[in-house]
Image (cartoon, rainbow, N blue to C red; front, top):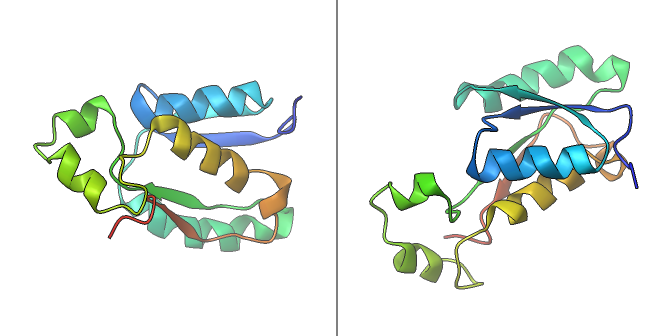
Length: 125
């Protein structure tokens, strides 16, 4: 089912881990996927871009994942068990967890939300 047909998704960092899972998921849903490599300023830009693009019916949001089991996390020096213990689910996120959230954020169900950063950390405190 191509629920994202005729949609374009810009994914920051899609070469591996979370970004790769997001690209795969969105492409499977029918979206055209553009990969961009940026930094934390992208979250601030979403508010600006949402104001610029809103009159065209385009939403702009960011997703900020918490500790996620990726190659990058394994090289971070953070203790995976300690990080997992800080989530009510007592586990690290998986790239697919974040991809599912992004798929929801870009879906028609989120058409009234723009300029927002979604915290996707499994309740990490």
